[in-house]
Image 1 (tube, rainbow, N blue to C red):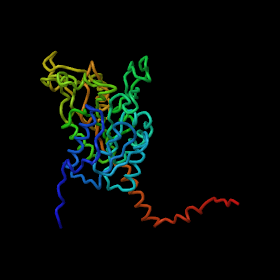
Image 2: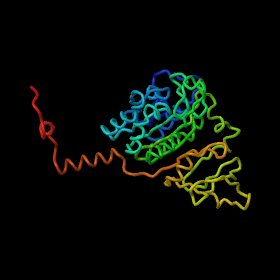
Image 3: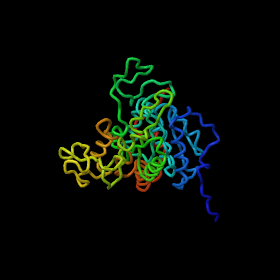
Image 4: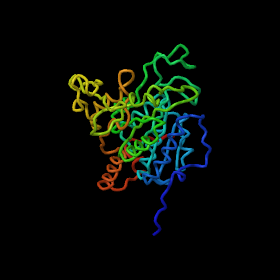
Length: 338
């Protein structure tokens, strides 16, 4: 038997011309995915990318795998059907803050609570890019766009907090320009059995350029980014001397500096990715008072929806035998229409 040839990044690059605007963060995310899949041992014939509508949703065209470009907001429903029809497939969902949280908010909510074994990537640029710059569910209050010329008055959604509130079992956050850490997050999401939700801060250079600069610029990144790791202290800063301490009986966190007011590293909270309450607090940290949290914020696996459905079906066959569709349709109350 021939040994399967090890795939490389090039094997996952399709023959389609990649057409995003120059400088779009989607290029970096695509490259990170194409590099990561071979490292995971993924195969093209067992990998499916499902998308909705938006700039992010061109993703399936650029991956040399199977894929579906579906309608606005409905990618989770199609992806659920794909996974239930063939549980052996690795199914990825690619969506944006508009596609996933506005038009598709209801579908996203239910796929998260059901815990279908999918990897969901949400590109968050706080704007509708494909339809020319309208405000999105994640746009900040005051954002001036063609649809909010006087400034948005809507309170924005926090994607990670939304996912946690929908009872997601895996929630993470990354940055488009941090491609090495994106690969790590893709790997963690892939290995998690159940729905994995990964928010990716992504820059739209045309309609919302620089939206994340206060977090991502090199000269401020160390002070404004908190990269979490299970079992490790929640430290950040250029000298790794600042951290988060649990306060008010663990109901909220505060920033402390090691060496000031008697604070030691022992006072800094340790990340527990199985603690949903801590995950909520980390998901909602924001400038200027706090750094923004990145990495796996929450991970607490439970049996996936597709695995449970498969077990139910197997049990039904064992106890009841193969069903008879004709008998089912003709059973119970029926009517004859003349």
